[in-house]
Image 1: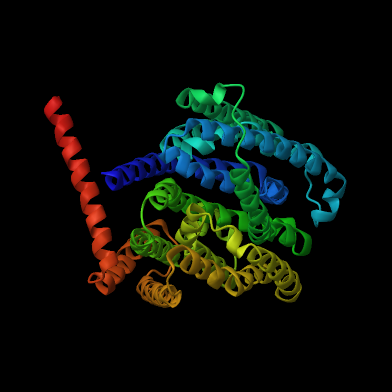
Image 2 (image 1 turned 135 degrees about the vertical axis):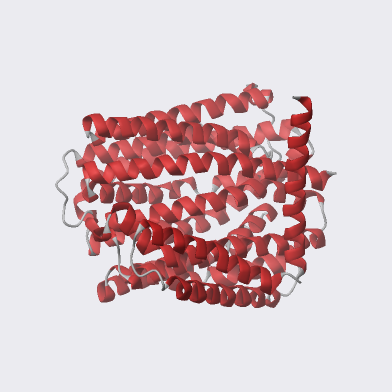
Length: 519
């Protein structure tokens, strides 16, 4: 019954997340198209650059969120409200300090903006634009921490309703602002307002769901719990550094060594990748709390059995997405905003490769976080960040923009690729990690086969027209799925996946029949 409850909560979270994401995606594309046509690539590049700068400043967060979330799983399972109240009080205090630190560091960067932006674009009020991006980032630290307890309690669908509701409102109003005024400052002001109200209403919803949060004097955490939390936070400092350097310095390096114009071009590709990654992320995020609950109550062997199926799903989703990106990127960009916004095939190849290798670690990280294994690989992100920055700096000066992305790939394969599963299998599952790497090689090889065969089949479409794009998309959906199904249909993982899908379809069918009967 407990397992069934976890599945139902995960599916509900996924359904709300994907539904909201779909509407948000459609409007974000419409908004981006209007943005490019009315404001141009320069504003697009500045937006991407400033967003990445603030991601670097988010190092101040230090991974507090992940450490606190892990500490909530057991008290939530045991309904220990006193412990939860104490944890949230600590969380709130830390986040207020973090918000102030980010604000101060962000303001101190203003005099150095000219050094970061190569080939200074013809944009007025650049400093004001930066401060507005900073304000949008800082506001979340004073409210957003309350969303953590809702998500950890397997109720992410609640935050999804608010998040995508305000996202949709934001895009609609921003399109109106762009169409009527073409004023970028007003466009950003709408974003700040929507961020504030989203965080404000989530905070109020958390108070309503968990009334004990409004009590003034929580009990003090016992020394052992505080020690564990601070130990995990210390480990997450390093993880945060590695993640930020890997993700958020690309645009900064491109701006400094290649030009902000190229940041604008790349931002169109990263927008599409982010949209797909968020779609898939809804699934992993929706089940992460259930994984935490599972690991808090079940044996390691049961946890491992669930992981093998979850990792197979991870492969299927990211393998299929990789095929679609490789085959459809160039024709999609050409049809959407024009061939002048496309990038070289060598750039697209490494961007897609990075998407795949990073995506294939999603379930490994979900289990690592739910098991609280932050401390065991605390040094890994330091090496990751050092290799990433060094390789990217060297290669960008040798081969241009492609070098930035190759630096990211090199740093990942020399660190995260092998260390993260090694830690999970050794300390989490107590099993030999070669099993994982054998599966990884098989999955990667089959993904490459699917890319090759799909690209070969799509070679019959010689022009980038809308009808040809639809034909390519159909091939991208059919060929990889057929390959995956044929090669894996006898495996235990495929049978488990089939069982899950069948149960979901049956549940939806029965629910529909009940609704019709009532009517």
